[in-house]
Image 1: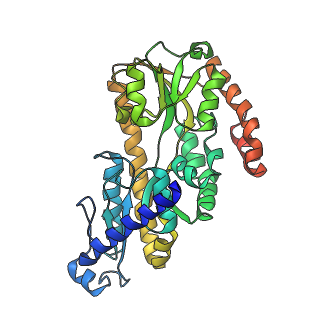
Image 2: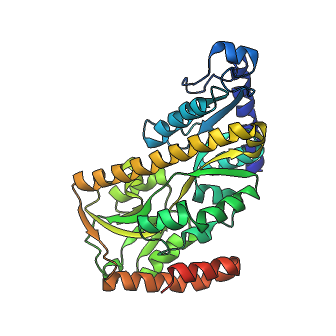
Length: 358
């Protein structure tokens, strides 16, 4: 029943957006921000520059405010307009106004939202079967991210699996590596985890990883994390550094350990209906725009993460790949892989063990 209500709400919101756009060929926006080609091209229903019929899309993400997510939506709209000769016109919907990532994913599947910036974990919450891509301690460096996730077989496989569920994965963005921050002590060995209560998301692999390390995992919603930390309900927080700042917990955190134990990817996706409405030339233009936007997104998030670490008042510890701590973390994680192996295609698990195993 909850899922039915969410889908009904999604269709109602999309209908409202389409009605709003009818007065200006899709250039209206729930957030008041828009991009469009010239009024004459919109009025005639075709782009004088490209010769293709005008198509419109709305794009959303779940982060409110003017961070990299919001700026990237603007960039996608601008570049789509530019590379299509004005025949692809985008509308930005205020971040967070359409619900969570599960709801956004379902809207993409229905075709009631044309495009979205959604984490791969968020997409998995709606369709399932993708979580092999972020097994703990599988990918632990940006070099591996770029080689396997952004430009390699992991990204290719995710694209194929999303396509089977009616989701067109056009380009990769990023949700960064998951780290741990706490208020008690530096974490520099497995022994330091013992007894620490860490806030983790409702992701089985995250919960199992901290348990395997000797910590106590606590599933608490993002909105309640700061209060839980301040009240002593938890000792620490698991998330990316960028998201820890968004959550408002870094003023309380005293120690950060860069575990890099789980890479959280994200994607620019669109609905199959919207994709099919474009000509091959427009699909190429949209792909080029999304690819450049995704690269900007990743570079910006990585740069801002380093700025946060450099300017923070907390103590930062890194885990060197040649350290015993790294080896212990890896060993604990690989034991978990074997527990999950039966859930996934054997060829995928074989490739994971070949590329990332010990």
